[in-house]
Amino acid sequence: MESGHVYVLESLSDDPQIAGIQDLHKIGFSTTKVETRIKNAANSPTYLMAPVKVLADYRLYNVRASWLEHLLHRVFAEVRLDLTQVDQTGRDYDPAEWFQVPLETINKAVAMIMSGEITDFVYNSELKQLVYRT
Image 1 (cartoon, rainbow, N blue to C red):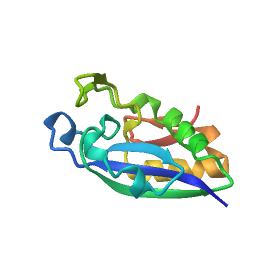
Image 2: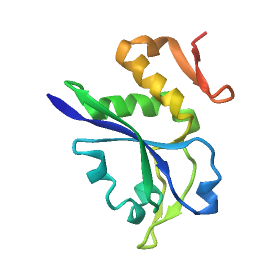
Image 3: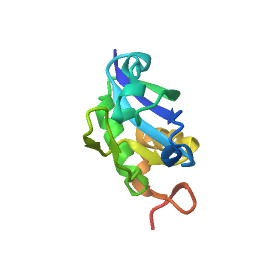
Image 4: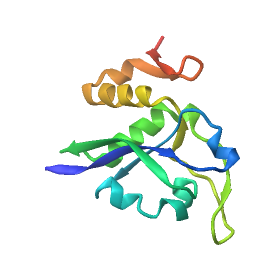
């Protein structure tokens, strides 16, 4: 039985503060289709007030999507986006689910979490990859 989706998005923002950030990806989860979840992305600070492109959609079965999302956020915590935006109502907003990490590394982390291997690895931001924990 499908239990949800963990997805990876790319921002299509033309804001110079965001557009110039290499390997910027949102890692989120949804219990509905990803397309439904991101429908109003351009109006939401969660999506950096811009349209987004779906790069990956991991359909999960018998696994809580929020669990996998939380683990990915912990693995990549060191490269979480540090940015404050102002939403349409004038409130400050700190988007917490955006990370500066290559898509290939996110894909590898998902596979390693599901296999249990991730416990022996950490993310190295200089190398932009998962490395064996010493």
